[in-house]
Image 1 (tube, helix red, strand yellow):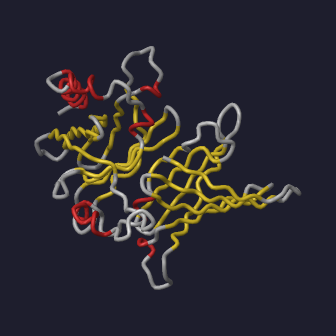
Image 2: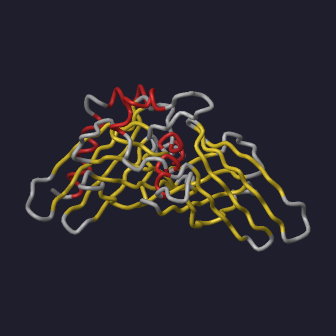
Image 3: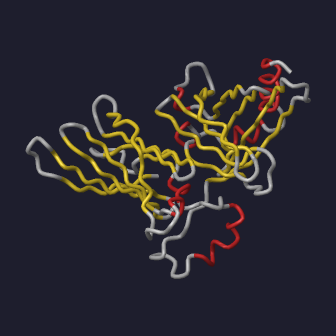
Amino acid sequence: MKIASLLSKISATATGAVAGLLLATSAHAGLNDLRGAWINVDDSTRGITKVVIGGEGAHPTLNTWGACHPNDCDWGEVSAMPLASSVSASPLSAERIMARYDKSHATSLVSAYLHGDKLIIENATDFKDGRTDTFYRYTLKRMPVSIPPIIQPNPILPLLPLLPLLPVESNLDQLEGAWINIDDDTRGVTKIRVVVDGAAVKVKAWGSCHPTDCNWGWTQGIPLTDSVGAHPTTAKRIMAKWDQGFATRTMVLKRYGHKLIAEVTTVYNDGRSDRFNTYIFR
């Protein structure tokens, strides 16, 4: 099947019986609503198991994982194309994204859009090895999170129905995703991007600047576990550090319900008073 045929198949699906649902449920969705970490509602799926939608502004990215044994296969992070409702609409208002994965044995076109509080993933694959081309649709939900002990005295009990959906090494994964400050007028950290690959972590942050936010760049994240003998993937906190010349910033990240908490210590090298700030992200 040619790429044009794959595009036609996806287009036909969107304009068929599903189109009415899309218009009804995603009319107010945009790129920021799509961003985040999503996991398949079917823990036995043999297809796409989870995705992370990230990127900056009108330039989304898509990281996809497929079912493999013993661990899911990471397809990698690629640039995605925002698909808006009209040619005059802002890309930020796009209700759907599409990304292309070129592999040695196949080319896959993956699109994502919201349906209510779920993310719908459509995957059209053009095989190069003689196999029949395929098209699958998956339903994903936002990655489940633990309930803080301060809210729930025995947090494991309400999580029992969700345990089959959680990755085996889930603690560090729960910090992954694209996060935005709940305070639109903050003069501090505006956005954070966390990428987790096993025990390896990368963190990117942006600070409030004019006319566009200042990109601090990627830095290595350090998983902080509860004991010296614990595996890094059990860490519930991540520490990241940026040396910006005029200042050194150390950030500790942790989950609190559906929010990400960032505690930032800034040590200035230019005579200004050092600072400690706490920011909340969604």
